[in-house]
Amino acid sequence: MLCGTAAAQSKIPVKVVVVTMFEVGNDTGDMPGEFQHWVEGEHLTRRFPMPAAYHDALMNNDGVLGIVTGVGTARASATIMALGSDPRFDLTHAYWLIAGIGGIDPKMGSLGSAVWSDWIVDGDIAHEIDPREAPKDWPSGYVPLRKSTPYEEPRTNDNGIVFRLNTGLVDWAYGLTRNTQLPDNAEIRERRQSFPGDAAKLPPFVLRGDNLSASTFWHGKLLNQWARDWVKYQTNNQGTYAICGMEDTGTLQSLTWLDRAGKVDAKRILVLRTASNYDQQREGITAAESLAETKITKYSAFLPSLDSAYRVGDIVVRNIVTNWSTLRDRMPQATPETLPGPTKKPTQP
Image 1 (cartoon, rainbow, N blue to C red):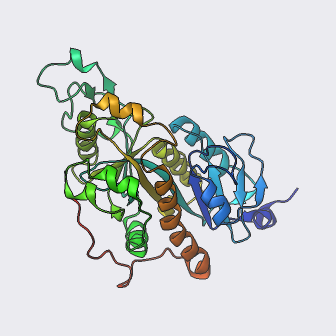
Image 2: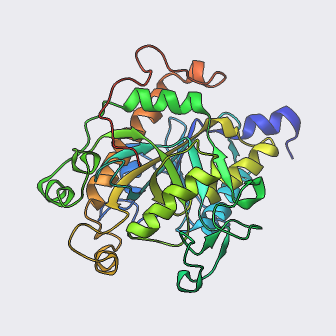
């Protein structure tokens, strides 16, 4: 049995962990899900069985490891805890890139756009009554945990799970990638004309905005307004909702506790979500009709959003790997060249 320094040295050092949430079929060679571009582009050919997780871990020779969590916060938290506790890997200096697709607020961005987030807000932990039974002056039937009315003040920390990422690291990643050319095509150009507002009609671009994570796949203009209000409430008006996903608070909860156990560094986490669809109906149809169109692999920008996630995220991964001799022990900082600068400004909700 190895012990002490010898045991630590026997672990496989990991530079970057790429966290994706689903794959459609095989990891390579067929219609892609979130993982396939990473497996093929980063040459993740070393497979490590993970019986306690949703999917095996795959790794390349550069120290980049990829994982699929499975859909939903429960699977995500279990998979990340299994990976973070795995004795084969040294994750103490690893950077974590959570890269997936989501539904974007058309007031913030357009189909195929890529969103770096500072705030990740849980949308599941709450009280709820059917809005048809709610008082008529309530904006929704959703009530913060241990409160009696929607958005009741003062907000307390146990009303919902809120994670704030390392702003300096997000500054750096956004600045490094903000001018990335993202894929566009005739289909999504036509679809985005059906949504009001300047931001919804722009070609895909990289932006900064916050993330609502909820295992319920919600949809529609009324729930979009709930998402905006919920993020503002839970961040004390510091966050602005831009995009929704399903797993990120589960992943971040596990990483937070793994940090507490000394196994990972939670200051090295980035969350990137790209817009596969809008989070609400287009003009001229109902929310129910829009939801019926919104199925996995049938999202209006499914393939472009997968491409955007890899294009934007891999710039960050390659930079970390290339500069590992410095970035292993010192996190990157935004420089005059990478500081966030002028960009296409979305309309704020």
